[in-house]
Length: 366
Image (cartoon, rainbow, N blue to C red; front, side, top):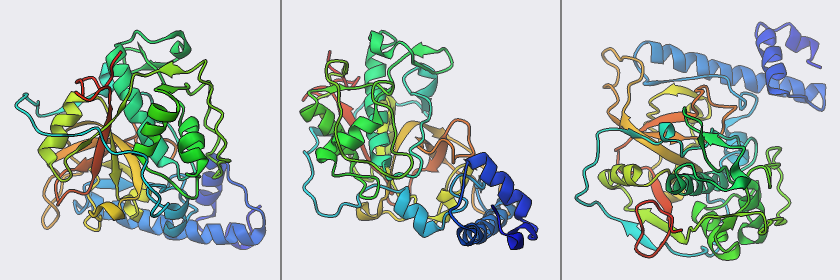
């Protein structure tokens, strides 16, 4: 129940509606009052930001999503799960580094209509973004190779507007099994470790979402691997390749030639916490690899535009990447796509799975 003091506040109806929509309940009246205070502060941020966006001072809007009763510090601790584990040894190095080549690259490209990108998933309140990012890259590479000819284990899944048969893989398997379950919700992990768990320990096989469903959304993971290799899909993935850090042209070409690129970004700002739609452009965004804290995936690129700016606002956004985020219930966009401008010294790290030392274009060897 909400405190009577809360009920008397002008924001009470908005908070009550948000609680119902997001299925929240609090252990005490004190906790309810505290969360209401956080909610009001976050609402003030969203309102102020959107007013500036309407005036042409921002290229994207924000909204009160499922993180609206969390402080920014709580959001960073509970949701952003990339690279928290400190100095543990990495699982393996990349097979190679993708370099720009002479192949033509179109001005824009989107993998989603091609039936290889699964619907946006939701990591909820667990620092498992790294696992979702790794799985998105493996799904994209596998589905692009299979072109709709997927095994019976994936018969319930479809991708894209034409309902192309595809596979949806298990993030929970990656969370539970990678490094023997060391990368819990509160510890976080690295995307390349998730890929290499499937390559090495699981011999290139991974269970589907239905076979090994995601249950860590409440913020806990037990770290016990329950992979079922007899039922798993043989992916043919044998490693991953990196894209040259800071090379935007190489990233654009890689995103065209390889379905779904796993990336690390700085998602720590409140503007990202409450992102809704438009081209995300944050001047406070960090660019050093050690400062990147969220794993997502690039599913396309092009020239996107946000709210039309008017002087002295920013210039209209230019080339941008379509970033598939793993917070479906928190994102205001039905597509789950954040448009992030490229440039500014290289704020992302990129990698994608590949099928052999020669790195076939599809990323998969059958």
